[in-house]
Image (cartoon, rainbow, N blue to C red; front, side, top):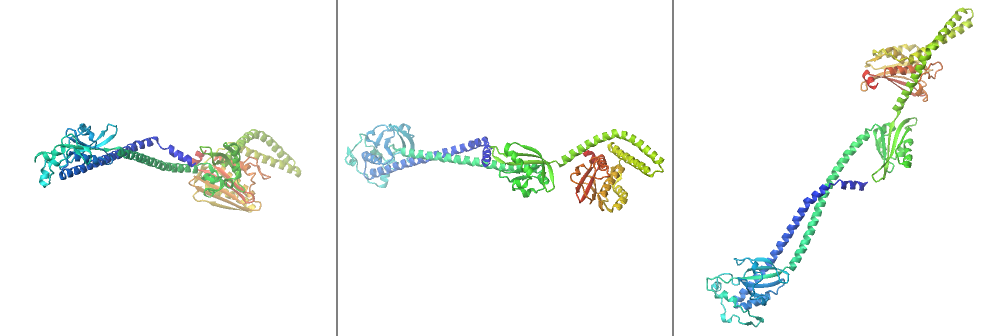
Length: 614
């Protein structure tokens, strides 16, 4: 699961973000590297220039000391130049005249020749000014050449410096001739170029000579290459670190947005699941409750907060949990209608669906159960079935009632005739009287059946329900007193006027009162309540008794025609009650426990609400 989330996070990273990071960071890293390389190059160039300038100044100082103190000639200067050129990293040391002809060289064979780099020399006017250039040697190697004006006597007009300071100048005859015996270096064939620095009269300029020093570049090039490599490595590191930082920022931002989106989706899904009109229970891979919505709480009668984390087998009814056996075998969605026991004496009809939850890789994540309470649906189905049976019965009654009543009239007429004729025979008179009573009873039953089968035509008008109830209670006072039954009434004072058929509603109440009285053989209490619910816009009448109650197996049949548990009952009383309530678009609710009594609730909706529901 974590790997999947990481993969999704990486996949959410836009290629344009990566490309943009590279476009921004690559030039920065390139310019940093180029700047560092150029800086290293400038530093190395400055180092070489300073080194060359230092060598030149040191050579000039030595030449100045020799020429002024010991009267050196060009041969001694040549020897000093050769010795100086023996220092490490010096390729050559050259002194030329202004035409580029070599007057002193670390390689004496080059004296008198034209120095090969003179053609690239930039003229120098200031004595202290150094110039530099890169030169290609004949052997293919490179050298770093530093050059400047050669000023061994200070760069002023001839002889003035010496004379002004009172320095003793050696005699010209003592200037070197021929061979320098101490060094073995052959004297150059050129005139002694150093003598010009002493021969010029005061006020004339010294001769123009240039001094060149060639320095080896190999060590510095190696160091520079190493520095370049280090710079490139560091730049690449900076680029990678910067790129990683940018990507990290993008990932962090994406992670933050993903968490925010996940929180919104989770809140949305929680609202959807919580308000789902069906029960939803989900378990994790360990078989523990992970989700339990409000509808599931209402159906199963268990608080969701307490069952989260509990094992599914201990929370769900066995009928629901056993659906997992089928899931384990087939792996397909299971849909079944089951009777689910949610209590000791309570069973709820449920339409269930169960499925296995898996991730993208097919790994098992748990189970999900969705179920719907079919109690109301079953009741509607029963109502439809009852209406169908009643309609069939009504058609049957309408067809046969006329055929039955005609013979009954003849039988009653003959019975009356025999009763009057047999006045002197009491036994026969009693027989005729019984025949007349039974014919009348049968006629009443047929009348009730016809009334039941006939479509209800209500004569509705605004009726004060409190007055109607009080009037109906007065009608049963005698029967209740005879049975030892106490009648209690609790009628709300704010009951409104209701559009209904007063005669039919009185018939409903009387039937229910009489059933309650007949259910209490040894006396008891009938309690009648009437109240108003302004929010739901209906009026409720409740009739309760503490009689023998209704057997659970008979509860679903009490409104069926001709169903009765009394020996002298016709079985049409409650059927007619149900029909009248349907005509008023009302509802009847029955609650009964054997031995404890029965409560019947009549719900009369307002006219507007009844029309909407109808």
